[in-house]
Length: 465
Image (cartoon, rainbow, N blue to C red; front, side, top):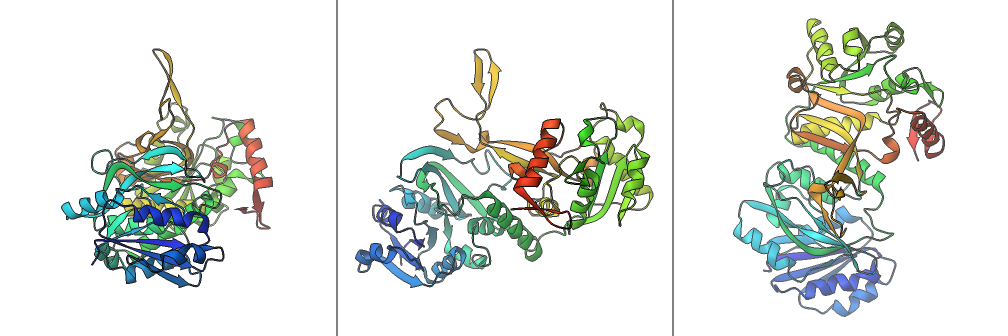
């Protein structure tokens, strides 16, 4: 029986497929089999595969178009190798990847999955950059950055134990496996670039919105179905300080005809994971307005906590003490500010699921920024998150910008006088979702996004196109 099964799901990537197959044939290790599954292609995939039909180490299957996750499970059922690795039809391998990754699994019986660094290449296969992953157990302990779905080698018996792939999702198959895997097993990574990840106009991973939405759904399924601790009882807290900031961030400022405070409360009410909602304000008019909404409680904030010099942690701590006197103690507090109008209930639920899965102290909402940043040093500007050569992208140098939409912390963190804990998870929001109104320009931008980028339903709720 072969040591490694490599399989290629192929759907209309005929122009790249031969390079992928050849990269397997050129491996320095020869104890492998290759399965190519033509997933209902309508291009020249069958013609590309025809010459390989008699190869003794290659099996070719044809099926109606079933999608990636279904095809993954087909490969899992028919694979004969001890280890399994997917190769996407538009990517290709370094000649040593099977040798290196299988050696890790051979020599480290406690490791169930191993993945390498990789090259980004353009449509013509030319290297654009090298992506170096953080070293598990040395540079990173919180496993919230998953291995790449393709070119990750996993023990077949582990995949079978995890019941394979979620078939209802048409992308992010590796993310679902990763979340199931890390609950029971140990990953390992090799800091060598051992495959070539092609970025082109038709890449499945190109569109960020469906990726983030699929990850949200996967997290929810993991929380609902896996044997995880009980989800936290979450208090949603809306802090409103009148007279202490930019006027267009006022809770009664109307965005597309609806006050910011009303939008915020509606967003929270959409979240299935929120147990209770409180508005904390120093302004009686704000509290009176918030009382109009079903299920919303109000707490008058002392003026000392409305000053700019007040610590961020003091406001939720005051609310928790007040609620404690009323006999209510939540497990976590989710702070939602009124000047971030494009947060949704789904984002809040995703943050709570993230806290549950990774057992972190806090979760914040962020946007990724791949720009080059600099700090001023002795000789002028020096790079913060990259090198002057711009070819090597280091995972531990990536920068994430908090957008102010969600701050979720466990109660024991807040009671210790901290706004955020030591272990901080995150949810990613798109740039257009991350506008924080603190200036006239940002209010104008929010209006433009709401009017031209996002559809407004008759109910007044915003829906991204």
